[in-house]
Image (tube, rainbow, N blue to C red; front, side, top):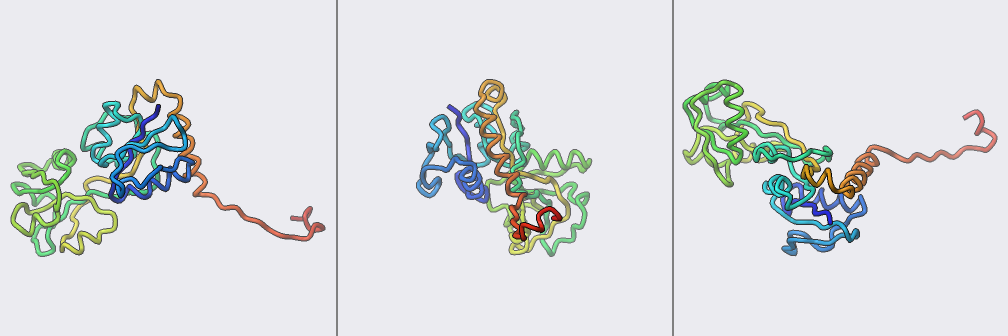
Length: 229
């Protein structure tokens, strides 16, 4: 039995369901809307587990799930020992370092001695260490990160963005890109070595992704012109 962990809600939920449906593995049920935790598929050897995208790297690392769909940012944040199999070509996003529009801070170096709020403390600390910016206090928050600079919790944030709309609404401006993230099919390393069925799932998803890059073109012409064409 292959267990696949997929996001139970959020921006990755619907595209993931659509991908598996196109691959011939539709979910039986409504996922998060029906509060399902587990769902069967058309393949009796494959089961879906609905989970928070942030938890999926650990589920796969620990073997609770053999495969999972999640973002590279979440894999890196959890420092999860998993195998990244396929870039799924959707859900790309960035972690950006941002400050209020009215802030005098223009460069990351100016945050030395200041506070930065984020849901990604590990990636944020790595960023400041890599750039040799010292004495930055990283404050971990579990949600509503965008409001923290406006209520005096922090001078800046590191948060995920895909279109920039949320930043604009919350009157924030990005001063640097911290991390570029993509969505991957990931695998438990032991499962990958032991379960041949995983290759079938990987091939099915790769086929769908490849098909999306192709178009079928038909041309009508007189039979007499076929040789010339």
